[in-house]
Every structure is written in structure tokens, then in C-alpha cells.
Length: 284
Image (cartoon, rainbow, N blue to C red; front, top):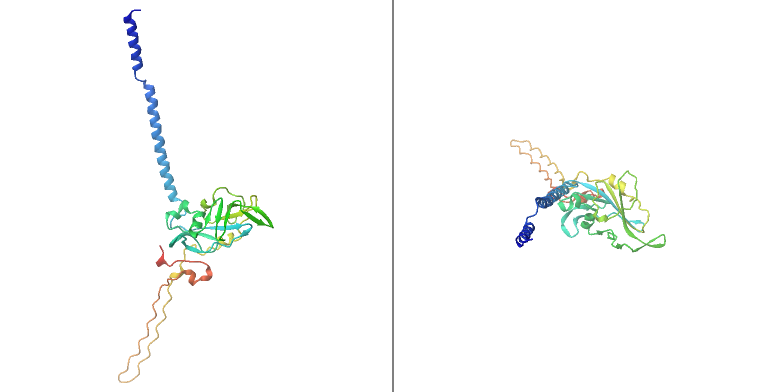
């Protein structure tokens, strides 16, 4: 083989090595880029829809829901959560999820932080100054109960854990322990939530006052008795003038007292109803 032929073959091989990649490889690359773009667009759309749906979830601002919360510690039911209407960490700010001392979580959100998926058992407890998680709870009994602490039940000490169950009035109570953080639970309107600090495997009974409390809600329509003024009294009639050449006119009757809107809460006027309303003039 001549040197010229060998030189020609080497040049031909170098030309092949420098030759650009085929169209098939470019097509694969373009398809990969297009796939990434499509996935990105889908994620943006899904995220946008999720945000929108979260804002549309009830209870919305202006709606009024009620859930019942019962707490059982070592076999004893705590009394109903004390009444509060202001946020524990901001006493001048009204709590959109609050208590009237009747066992109910009165839920009519004033802001997005209390509405929709934010209307949770934990939010109610936080606004009242308490704490609840799957590992511990610090509630209105003033004691912190942590998983592994002991309960004395029927004279026997046993390790206990936070547990919880849910149900609805008029339906069988399953008493089945739920998983997850009870503080993160978004309860439904008219739902019963029961929290327990009991040994594992214990029966989880239905809160005894739940049915009655949910059947006798007194502020469903947002009544506000505290805004009604007291009617003024009727003025007395004037006396008749004496008969004579120049009869005198009778005295003018006194004007009735002007009704003044009350600035008291409804609970101060109708304490027996165990309900607290704000006057419309003070409403946010």
C-alpha cells in the first residue's frame, strides 16, 4: 500500500470522527427538554389550583361552625374548656375559634389564619393558650402530660400516651384510635373530637356531654342581645288650665327618656344562657 493511500485513509477516519452527531440524538435531547418544561408547567398549574382550593375550603370567613372537644386524662373527663374570646397571646385580638365554656369550639373565622384548613383543633387550643401534639398535651388542667408518663387507673400505675378519636352525633361511636397529630386535625361542622391520655389498648369512650352540647347550640344565628336599647318611658300628660277670663295653659308633659344602646356583652345581660356576644357596634 502506497503512502498516499494510507494518508488518504487516515484523513477519511479523522473526518468521520469530527462528523456531527446524527439527528436522532438531537431529537432525544429536544424531547428531554420538552418533557422538563411540560412537567414544570403541570406543577405550577397544580400548585395554583391547590392554593385556590385551600382558600375555598370551609369554614370561610363569615361562616359559623361548631365542633365538640372532650378530654379524658387517666380515665377522668376534664370539665369543658374555659370560656375565652380573645387570643391568648394577643388579648386585644378576637379569636375566630373560641370557647363559651360549653364544650364547643365556636368557629367563625375573622382571618385566613383561622379559616379553611387552618381551622384545626390545635388552632383552637393555641388561641386559648394550650398545646396538643401526638406526644404531649398541656391543657386547662394545668399539667403537661407526655407519652410515657404514668396513669393510676384502678390502683394500678400504667404508662400512658396521647390518643384521639372522632365521630358525629347520632352515629355509633367507633372508639378507634386515629393516627397522626390531633392538633393538626381540621374538624368538620358538628363533629366530635375526643382526646385521651390513657394506656395503649384502653377503650376510648365517647365524651358524655357531646350530644347535648351539639344539640343545644345557642348562637347559631349570631344573635346579639347586647345591642338592644332599653325603651324610653312615656312622658306624663300636662294638667288642664284653670277656667277663668284668661285660662292658663296646661304644663307640657315630660319627654320620654332616650333609648341608649347597651355596650355590654350579651352574657352580662343574659348570664344564664352561658353565651357571649359582642355588640354590633364593637364587631370587627
